Image (cartoon, rainbow, N blue to C red):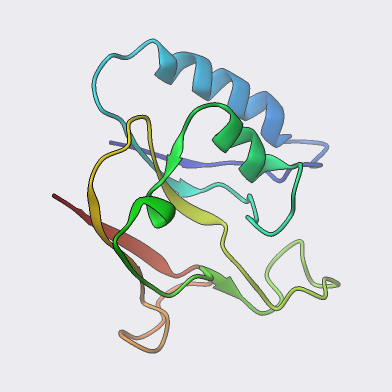
Length: 129
């Protein structure tokens, strides 16, 4: 299990693509099942950017593998860097897998509905078979 915090796609100081290529190259050397989690700053609603780069690198989004999901957005409102955005909520926190495991549940937690909000990002959890 690995956790990460990545830069935004067009960030001048911490560009996502530079970080992702280095991390992906390192993880592809591993033969075991990898669960890669964290704040990827990769909205799945923006095509041709960070999220697509991850999926195109042969990683599986646990959200899409799950038989049952609860919630979608992991950040709502005007978060840092998106103060002027028209997007009011986005999914930027993920659980990615290097192999298509049998994911029973994928759930957004600490979202103010099923548990109190504790951060500007909601948590996510998954259950595998």
